[in-house]
Image 1: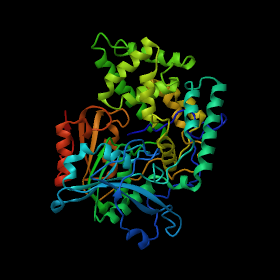
Image 2: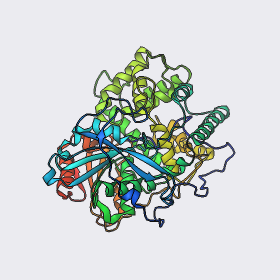
Image 3: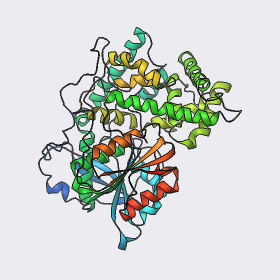
Length: 519
């Protein structure tokens, strides 16, 4: 899944009202630079042989569900906490694997990352394994919980009760000085809690370290090249690995590509534009029906949703669970329902229920699924890990003045979501560690061709990001395929043109022509 770059109130550290007018760049205390010279890894890491065994049920941090049965097996991989000090502390990464069915014609391992950052690959791959059945014939399908995620030294900033309480207390984006102060205080307290609970792990969960983990995993799995399928944030991880180890890039697909060229403000603004585009596409289709719960496209639909959100600032809606649908949870529920065209009917029913019946059950369900809350009130560590990884990666620290300066720009980009999403710019302010730069190094001269998939209606990673990634990877590396459709990610749309191109790349090493369009 592709979590939003920004967070809601109570999701991260923040800044004081009197801070400077623009983003600040404090000294680096977090992830090591991508081009740093590091000591060689001792044999205790490179000579590992994972002990594959039956998988337990996913832990609460990974996500609820029953244990995956055959052919799935689980193991752990020991990695240095800090690659600059390989003789120091270590952590264990959780892994899952299904072995290739055709052992004689096996290509190798195909490693998946499903995005976030913060998504558990150990929980996700077995649940979605049928989507990749054609690849299982000749690949071992492998995924893992990246460092800081799930059962791989998972970052936890608050307990479930505190997360629930914060979600119920948020009543919309701040509009008065008092509301701004309350927002900043809640964010600062969140950063303090996260620092106290996780300590030095927060400095080591950035994408550069995760990419080094990927390459150690490749070596331990016995592959000369890393064959890789990355989705959303997983595209950034794969591109950073390609930059670090261009000669070790195998058959690679990056779907729903993150734009590597933008700073924090530009990234979140691009996402805001993407969600508005997806909403307008939904409203256009909804408006063809006389039963459309928001009336129709354009200003009529915008007004229906903004009026709903506005009413929830003062009067959250009841639900059967006893929890209330607040403004922030309603916005999250709508955003979550725009990730897939398959959720559009659900979105219509959820909005109708809220507007006509005065109930918030469906939108709350969508929001809590997105936030990683299960039926027992337990949260995956998706939110904590998302903030921790992003803040370990990014160098700049937008301030309250940045939010004030950017508010109108965000509202122009999205009259429905802009006022809410602009506050995500404060996700990393007051975080205890930060990265070297906002834009990851992804130049990968000499790497094998990497297939980039872009969807024209993608809300979270708009198509322009894939174009920028192709440029940054360098000549002859990025091969761009555009899918003219809706949703976050192209391969799982079921489009046969996209599917054939991906299978050709991964099974035959034969990517489509650069600039291919699948209608």
